[in-house]
Image (cartoon, rainbow, N blue to C red; front, top):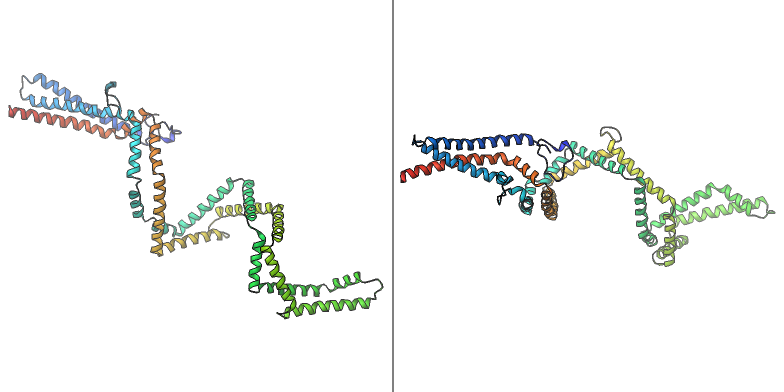
Length: 436
């Protein structure tokens, strides 16, 4: 990869360290500083040679020669030290040189452990999360109607996109299986028995009987002609019509009278028999194996009916259509009421959190505990990821990238070593003159 390559130039090779955005500029800055440091070293060497030649004629040059000699030694030592970090000086196999490429894996392991122990510790993360006051910030952000609208739209768009990706037949099959599985786990008869027992306990079943009596009375009143025709069809052929009319009138009158008496008398014997029948049936639903088995058989027949599959398909189609409408609806347009309700709910939730310091503290505690749980669960994985990632990088490329990043600053070590070495040498030369 060229020095100026970036992630935009193509897919990143996992064997190489991540590209540097301004790699070309940093490479040029490094080379410029290398030339300066090397030029200073060459200048010290030239000064040493010149003063050495003319020192016999001009004894005062001994001070300059001492400075140049020590500067040259210091510069060479620091050049060796800086170069040995990234490569072997002059290509010589000197021990403990090319530190970065030869110890890359150990550096990666140390870096992973350093991050794990110093950045992902419970104390450090806990202090940062607590100081951030995430609960209050999140509540204040979501209390803004514009932000709530954005969240609602994004959630709706995300759910709609997920719904479009899913295959309809698979989701319908899942819904169908879920409904059938849940229904099969529940015994219908005991559940109905409990419902009937509750209805009987407070007399609500009598309200059902009253409604049934009203419907029966209405049926008799609206179907007298049907009753008359039925009596005529069942009567002997020789029976006079007047007798048939008489029978019809008596039957209709008896039905009306009976229905009225039962409806008006809470203690009517028919009501008592109805109570007994309901209680007996409820008891059988709860305790009778035969009744329970028949109810389960009816339930299985219903679950096997094609209408169940059609219902599952209808449920998924309705949900999918609603998500699509919510994702594409204009918030200001008519029909955006459901999405607006979500926005109002988010705003209300944010305001409720802001108005209740205890609730805000609870939200902060939840966020803190959740974050600490994730950190404690996965910080060793983060360390292992750093170690394995660095181990997979090419050693020479890694060394070059690191040198580009920090090499310019390391050249100041060479410059400082040259100058400080020269000053130390000059000081020692002066001290020697006085002592001697």
